[in-house]
Image 1: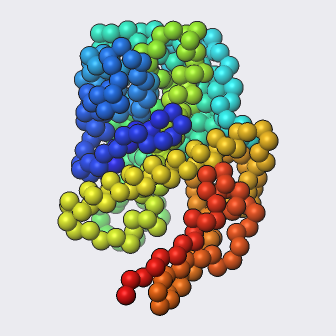
Image 2: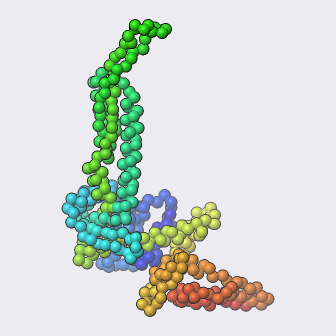
Image 3: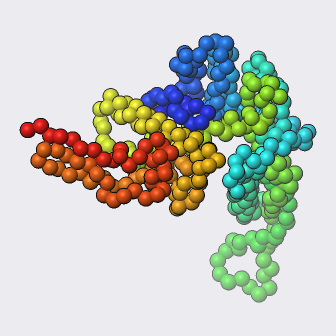
Length: 395
C-alpha cells in the first residue's frame, strides 16, 4: 500500500510504503502528527491538509486541532449530521452557483450551501455541494435500486398469493407478518383478502355419480401489490449529486465555497500518482518475494513518480507563456496542458541505437526527432543531445 501527499500542483512531496492491511484512518492519524515536521513548518505557519472522508474520525479531528493543521475533507455518511445537513440544504433552497471548475466540455456544474455546526464537540464549517455529473450517475443507480426492489417484492407477493387460509383472521395475521418482514424504502405494499371456493377432495375412490354434488368450502388468499412511493423516490432524487465537505477554514470571504470545493477536488493529483505507480506495465514484470525488496521497489516507484510529475509541471508551466503554441498530445490533439502520460507517449517513440566499437560505445538516435518531440524536450529543458553519448573503453 502506498501513502502519498502532493503539493497543490500535483508534485509528490511525501511518500510512504505501508503494509497492505493498513487502514486509511490509521494512515491519516500518523501523518497528521508528522506532516508539519516533515515539511519543516512552524506551529504558526499555515498548513492545509486535504484528504478523503477516511480522514474524518473523532481521533483525527482532535489531532488536527492539537497539531494546528487546517483541513478540508468530505463528511462521511456514517455521521448523522451529513444527512441532516443535506436535508436542511434541500429544505432551505438557498444555493450559491459555483459553475464549472474545469474548461472541459463535459465538466460538471456545481452549486453550494454553507452551514456552521458542531461535530465531536468543536465547531466546523460545512459546505453542502451539488454536482450535476454526480447527479446523473447517482440517479441511474437510484433507478436501478427502485427497479430491483420492485422485482423482489413482486416475486415475494407472487409466492405469497399461492398460500390459502381457512379464515380471514389467519389471512390478516399473515398480512401483518409479511409487511413486517418486507420493509420497503421506495414502495408501499397494498394488500387485499380474496375469498375463493375450494373443491374438497372425495373421500372414496371411483368415478363420482352424475347426481353427486361436489363439496366445496371457503378459503382465503392474500393479494399483495407493491406501489411506488412517489414522495420517498422524489426525496432520494433530490439527494442525488449532494455531498458534504467539512473544513476548519471559516473565513468565507478569503475562502469562498468555490475555493473549498476546488481544493477538495485537487485530490485528483494524488489519484494520478496512483495510476502511475500501479501501472501493470511498470510493476507487472517484477517478482519480488523478499519483503525488504518489495518496500525498496515501492520507494523507487515513488521517486520515479516524482520525476514523472515534475516533468509534466515544467512543460505545462512553460506552455503558459502566451507566445507558446500548443503541443500535440494523445491522438495528436493540440493542448497546452499535456498530461505526464501524454508526454511519455510522445517521447517513448524515440528509438536509441547503441553501437559497440573496439575502443568506445556510442549511443545515437535512429532518426531525427520530429517537430513535436523537439518542442516537448525544449519545454522540459532538454534537447536531442540527451539521447546521444560516446564512452571510451579501456583496454
